[in-house]
Length: 382
Ligand SMILES: Cc1cc2nc3c(=O)[nH]c(=O)nc-3n(C[C@H](O)[C@H](O)[C@H](O)COP(=O)(O)OP(=O)(O)OC[C@H]3O[C@@H](n4cnc5c(N)ncnc54)[C@H](O)[C@@H]3O)c2cc1C
Image (cartoon, rainbow, N blue to C red; front, side, top):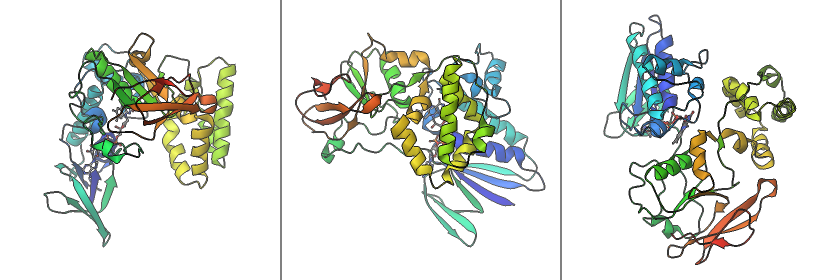
């Protein structure tokens, strides 16, 4: 019997377990052990909170666990009485419940001889000798398996590269935005400075608005781009067959750009072009890692066209509305380079080409600038 350990019980680990259980046969029984520091009912930082306002950033009609049935998640919810449509953004906790239910069903229907166990603990080391992997789990004996899969997800964010490291010890600085009770230390009128403008920042801005936070909320990202709001748009026909034929990464890039231009001339939303490739992104991604020019491709995407940033980050429209005029949230371009523990943050801006303006924080008793300015601005009390 083949022994498999999946380290990490987030979405990736759970989907792998689901598929192993579905496809194991009694001729080829397997033993699956899933190891995670979290509780058996958790599913990684994205899906382990109960709050209904923490929403999926992909519409329900596209979150099905099975590629052949994108609406499977939607149908699962409707079968349980939810009045949801394909373009609705459902709470992330429902997605966790959905995936855990699928794993339970697969477990019940598994082939004879196949076993599954959830082990709670922190994996501290792995030895690979003699064709096996020996997994060391804190406060538990070693687990020996034939194959170990790392499904560790994202690590906690890095500290910003600031000169004054002691500032990072400040109780006003919070490194891990997913810590439970992360907002509890705030007073209602505090100014909150969020580094980054992705899904986590949207989550925190929404949570602050729901708590009727009265202080300013400022979000900073290197490019000052806002998360795009999802919206309904006509589909664009997949051109994966064309992408598949491309010989180099730059060829792929050119093909995608050609279709973006084509969509524009046809009056189709450019996001539909990217969405048309979604079912095949894993194949494209796996191809990238084997290509020597992958690094230059990513660099040209990120720095040249800002392609990834422009199309990847999307959120529910009402979530992004936290940044509308009249709201206390503002979004700025820049990167954090320095901070004094006693003095407020200061942000100065420098031109960042077509992408707007870039900013830099430095210790100062004065100001934070607007994106539209180049050198001056207003103070963020810390
Ligand atoms: C706040 C937030 C919201 C998101 N919302 C969406 C969304 O709406 N839609 C979407 O498609 N994607 C969303 N994402 C992206 C999301 O991260 C991925 O979709 C998916 O959850 C990643 O799953 P994963 O299994 O790779 O990693 P994770 O979910 O991070 O899981 C990794 C697991 O590994 C465990 N682990 C790590 N190291 C060890 C160790 N040494 N020992 C034991 N256990 C360990 C962790 O405890 C964790 O449970 C969101 C991400 C975040 C952070």
